[in-house]
Structures are given as C-alpha cells and as structure tokens.
Image 1: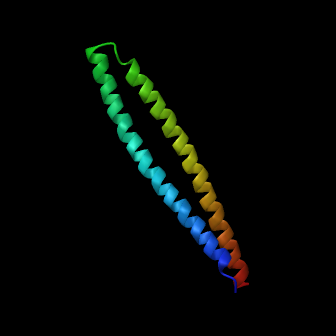
Image 2 (image 1 turned 90 degrees about the vertical axis):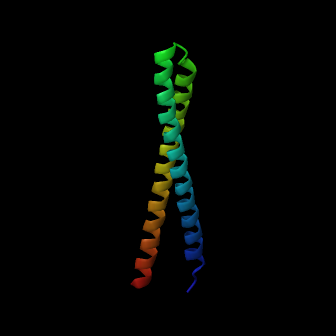
Amino acid sequence: MNLSRFDELEQKFGLLISRINTLKNEKLGLQREIYSLKANLEQARITSSGGEDIRTKYNALAEERDRLIMEREFIRNKVRSAMERIDDITAQKED
C-alpha cells in the first residue's frame, strides 16, 4: 500500500491548520485594535474634530479584517475539500 499520498495530504492538512490558526490570531489582534480605535475615535469626537486619521485607520483595519475573513473561508473550503477527498479515498480502500 502506497501511503505517500496520505503523507502528502497530511502535510498539506497540517499547513492548512497552521494557516487557519495564524489567521485566527491575526483576527483577534485586529479585533482588539479595532475596539481600541473605536474607543480612540469616540474620545477624539468628544475632545476635538481631529478623528479623521483614526477613522482612516479604522476603515483600513475593517478592510483588512474583511480580507482575512475571506481568506479564512477560502482555506476552510480547501480543508473541507481535502477532508472529502481523504474520506473518498478511505471509503474506496474499504471496499
């Protein structure tokens, strides 16, 4: 039985899991920064009208968050596809 394909899939699956975890950590960091920027923006609105820079940063972070969410979904779909292929291969071997 040639297990090299399984080894390759296992390695790719490990890389996907690692990337997903990295994206989760980045997402958490961006969420913290967004909350901080929201607080800073509110404070700036109260004290002055100089919140434009903060608003720009907030918008950039929101765009980055959206990009990371899309990338996470893309990776999630790849993992799902890999798992389906693994299931199909194991089901064929059982027959």
